[in-house]
Image: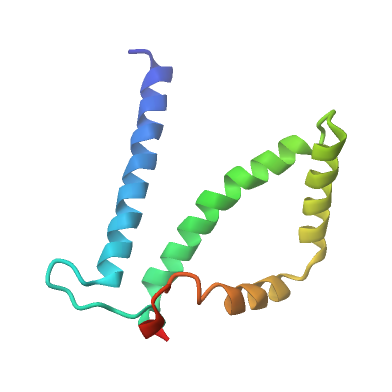
Length: 117
């Protein structure tokens, strides 16, 4: 096996390990399995939530940023306009405003059950 193939295989294993660990973290935080009691999402907090948000934002944000960066110099006008527009809008917004909007809109998403409120 060549070094390039070993590197690609290591990357696949790493992505798989991160995925499994994130899912395990979510299962353990929700509870209700392995004899754990169910924990409402409103009672989550601290380091696990911070780690979960950091990993997910990097894991989802990086591929999205790469796609936008590749779309900006594109020869297709619509793709170029959408990429440039998205980049300029996000760059022009204050970070505190984005954090405020996220803090209002994100908490209801993980709890589809009515008894969580």
